[in-house]
Length: 527
Image 1 (cartoon, rainbow, N blue to C red):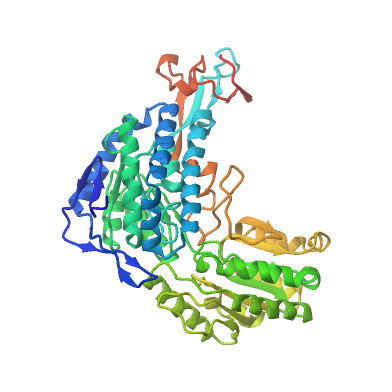
Image 2: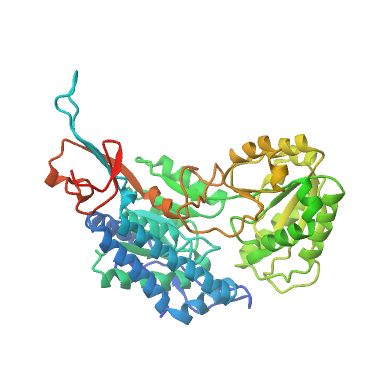
């Protein structure tokens, strides 16, 4: 099934001169399949096909697009054990995680299919004409959201399914009516290729235009740079490092026509430990947070990388239990030798920073590519003086910041950069006394969590997975949930347009039976 080729529209191609293999991080050996990196010609062909497909695809009915997304979900499930085995061989993650992520991927596709069936995502708005209005007549104005055009999606290293070929970016862009070109992540090229083949089969089976989807192999940065510079591309979705996301953002800004880059990047997801909660439930929270830090070997964008508390005997008790719980976790393989090496380097650099001390570090010998959990401790004074202590270490690591009092804690929080999440652990009664701290955290994050850990992102309408820079390049948008579709849409207003020329969503008869805002009132009625 795996031939290592690129998928350019409905064709498979290997015209590039560079090739690479994926690595099994548990066995620490290369997997067998050779993958052929996309050439400049293949990249241009993929974007040209997407551009040609754009108008046809954008005008497909919402229900037709919904059938396409549901068909993709069915084809992914039909890959069955072969997909799971490939996923595990390229990531070192267990089969249970593969099944869970496959379920999330399929459910996201089906969720966007339901959004298409319902139709209100286009935000249809109508203000009818008032020709007799004085002193100036009012014209007929109708507005709705329309797809941007071809979108490039950059696969994520840590989510080979849910944030890659058919992940949330792709699913939401296809739902919006945008053709997608995926730049596959080299660490799981086989998983990406299999899923992409499923997308193409679904596209053919539902009579979608060629070019609605393409998948490009890539072993480095060159493919992404060539792809982004193509003038026919209209937007980018990215999940990864601050360095990678910022590089794409800067490239997009330098184009003759700048385009939006929706990049989800670094986050340390601070967890604030309030005194009363530590006094009453230190053991409970130490166990919960230890599990969160080490979940998936810490390779989540929502991993709790900084813990903050007010120094006293109760916090000391929490730290002691946390160290014990971390020590009892069996370290797991990381996704790739490169990620394992970066984790070891990041952890080592943190230990070299002034004022840090080791709370706990797994010290027993492990196999290659295993992420050894570690917790360091530092005073709030040292934390404030050293911005390096504020940065993410991608893996099973967290830094505990000890503050002298609430004012010290608030000063430390004020220095944090933008985050995806922040968590506050406290009793209901004491939370009422920390209004300033809560408002402070609200300005820093996209999701504020009360008495919970940041790992685990529910995919639903009320989820916001984003945050102020550098968590993302645009805090107004979410990479998860219903609202993820909004990234790939723009508003168009039609003034005094004849009814028969209007999109169906704005026509007087409301043939799609959408909930529309008509003269300020939400209604499904005809005009």
